[in-house]
Length: 40
Image (cartoon, rainbow, N blue to C red; front, side, top):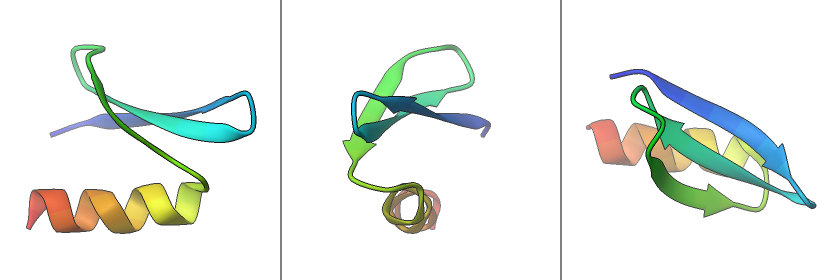
């Protein structure tokens, strides 16, 4: 599944390929780690 990570006011938000909010994280690295766990 495709995900987009965007910066928003000092944190990042992750959206799926259809533009739906999935979760937020403090850093891109944290978001990528969480995505790995989510997709495992």
